[in-house]
Every structure is written in structure tokens, then in C-alpha cells.
Amino acid sequence: MKGRSKDEMVAGCIEIAGERAICDPRGVLYFPALELLAVSDLHLEKGSSFARRGVLLPPYDTAATLERLGAVVEAYAPRIVISLGDSFHDPEGSGRLPDPFRDRLAAMAAGRDWFWITGNHDPVAPRGLPGETVDEVAIGGLVFRHEPSASTVEGEVAGHLHPCARIVQRGRSVRRRCFASDGRRMIMPAFGSFTGSLNVLDRAYAGLFLRETLMAYMLGTARIYAIAGSMLRPG
Image 1 (cartoon, rainbow, N blue to C red):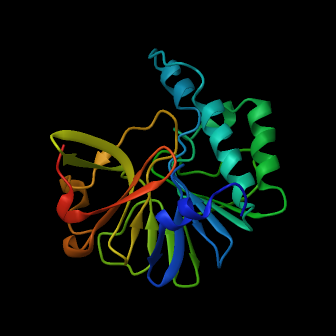
Image 2 (image 1 turned 45 degrees about the horizontal axis):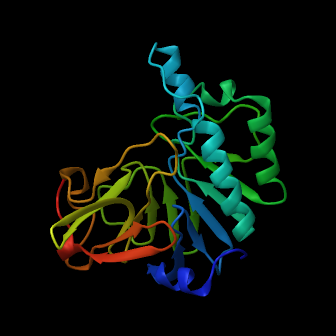
């Protein structure tokens, strides 16, 4: 791995079902022993998807998202990359991808195993892009999928819910995207530039985590902030 200081690595170093992982403040999860990089909810071509419905958004989301993704792929140089679903904002999104962005994704995937996990926004394989499209991937004691299972799954890494956390300290409220984990499973933050977020205390997360061991790993500008579940606030 290149480009990250020791302090930044330690700040986001956790275990999921006994497997060491690094929560990177840029919103990706890296497993050093597996040389595996996971990213979730890219929502590429969201701007063009909205434009087709007459809702105009700045048309720069795909460029910005791929710029950040390219930086983390270069930094970690992983052997395996897993995109945890909703990689595109709609099933036709990959077909609208401009050639320069298509070439950039192909360059990122070159020489490594790249998995596109199907999501509720993109249930079909992306067109004309390298990599394997699957519903989920099991590697060692981990299972990677888009939507978290309603039952307890040891070693599950999922996306879909776009978690964020809110804390209040000295009268000041701070709300940030986060990795959410209780040590058994992990739900990753959305990586896409135009994606929103949902508080980890929302009822959509009910039953997914053990409250007594829940941790929110909040994304800071240059580091991860580990916040105990007891300190979290709704909203």
C-alpha cells in the first residue's frame, strides 16, 4: 500500500469476524491479508439518469467519483476489487458511460480480479466493462453483498443503506458518513459523489447490529474517528 501514513492506518484499523481491515477516510475498506479493496454504492451516471427525467444536476458526478476511486486503487494496488452494488444508478447507466470513463475503469481493473455485485439500482451486468458480475462473493470467512441480510451473518460486508452517524459534543452537532460495524458485520458508506446518507440509528438498521458493540467509524478529512454506539444521536 502507498500514500497513507501509519497514524491514518491505525486510526481506521478494525476486525470483522477476525479479519483485519482498514477503514480508509476516503470511504473504502481494505483487507491487507487478502489484498482486497471494497467500495460501495458508486452510483455512476446518477446525474445523467436524473437528466433523462428532466431533473438537472451538475453533470460531473461520474468524473469526480472515478477520480477518487482511481486514487485509492493506485494507493492500495489491490489484487482484488469488489464493488458492492449500485455501481451504476440505473440498469442503463453503464451504457451511457462516456468512452474516457470506460477506458479509465478498464485501466483500473487491468491485472486484478474485479467483481461487480448486483444492486437494486443495477441488477444486470455492466455493458462493455471488464470484471465478473455476481450476486455476492465469499472469500475466506467474509461474504460481500449489496443488501445486508435480515439474519445475523458473521463476516458480512454490505452497502445499500449509506450509513452516517451523528454526535453532539460541547453543544456542537457533527454528522458524517461512516462505516458501521459491531465486529460481526460491516455496512459501508456510499462512495458516489451524489449519494445521500442515513443515520445508523434509523429503523432501517433495526436488528442488524448488537447495540452494545456497535461502532461508527466516521469519515474525517484525513482520518477515521471511532465512535461508540452509546455516543450516537438520531437525526
